[in-house]
Image (cartoon, rainbow, N blue to C red; front, side):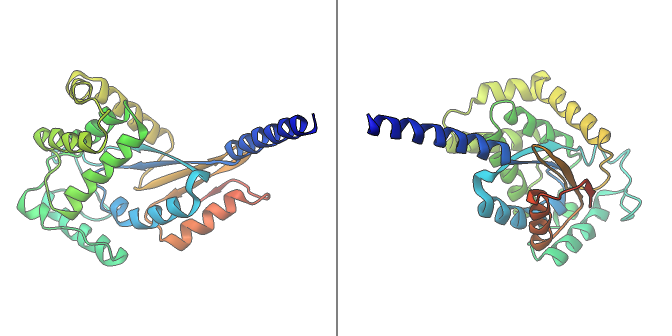
Length: 244
């Protein structure tokens, strides 16, 4: 009987501990874009945060839609209105972060828009957040790392095929239907609305939330030490609303 009681107590403690872990979990919503060089530049820092905190963090991604088309894109801060003018911005991001970025893409084979890869990402995300995170990394690696134009539908479908090799349960037919049939576009439009509601003007942007505490808002590229300090603020008992 004592053993049974002990087991029941242990079960209750395990259950309470699990609930506490869920309650304490930090949800990080990342607003980004497959053509955002600063998001790629910050990826090593975010990967370190992800590795350090593990299951204490829950991640989700939103597509901000950086470049609708070059007919109506203007970045007055960086004086960018044509594709070749994006090259120096990527060079600068690489110089600041130390992360290699193939800026020659903008002179060699410039993407016409970031909307197609955003929609493709959402088409994957409709199946799984895990699949979508891997697919986003593939988009960045192929674009920023290998200098491949990811605005082409054929490239997006090819990368989805590569994703299928990593995740056999990933449904290629469902992906293509979502990509072409409108489901991915509708999900992307919802992300754009959410981005505007939060008045996000620079990418990447992070919103960190924890139950019972005020959210923390980070806009723009930040190094690892900065991100670590912000997370530590969030888990402290005296956290108040902070916009950084």
